Image (cartoon, rainbow, N blue to C red; front, side, top):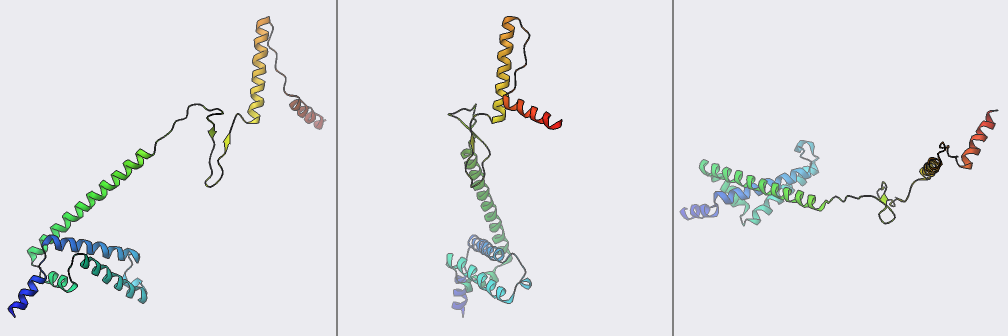
Length: 199
């Protein structure tokens, strides 16, 4: 009888740190199972879903215990035989594990943000031309549109301004009054056609 009690005590001998690690991993595994079923209450699940969830929870617990070489029976006995002092120590260890995990997660996220920031270099383009064209809006999955030079309307405007500047420059050299540049023939015909239509 004494040997059975001694064997039982040895079978469930886990340090508070080991027990905290097992409990921490067990809680994480159960949370993953709950997430799989949308954190719904068992009353909100169909009977088949409830059965499957119970199987998944048991499998998750078995995997955690196997990773720590602890049998399910020994784990249940250890939980049942914990004294209040041991229980408090296990809770303190669990809190320390959770805090450490949170710090590691934050450090990982900070490293990821730094890598993204380092990889996201902004290129500044000064000027454009044939060798350095300006890219217009791109459509996802569509071809890239690159425009070179000015649009046709702007080309006509530019020609008129250049003509006016040329005439003003020539007139100023001769001491004459600047004259208005003539619009292209097509524009004059359009205007005449519009006047003819009004008569």
